[in-house]
Length: 100
Image (tube, rainbow, N blue to C red):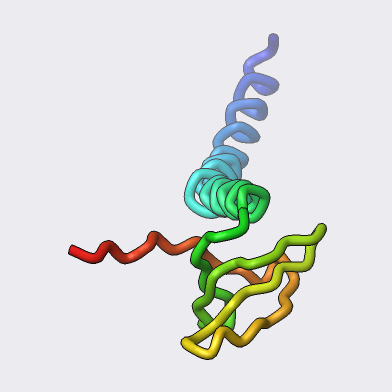
């Protein structure tokens, strides 16, 4: 390989290295954690069952009383008002509060 080609290749690698490093950093700091959160959310939504205490994305807390496909009915408050929601509207499954 002639010396001029070697220096051109080295210059090309040297100029592309910062871009490659930036892409790697973005992947590990932004893309990978986002995919992990999405996977955890999908698993949580798939594992919902009757009797779970949940919180919706609107902040409503209730207990699941019925699940039909992607429609979930929750019971809210002391009057046991029933709300019908889409499965994607559930933000989290809450642990029951112990009576200790």
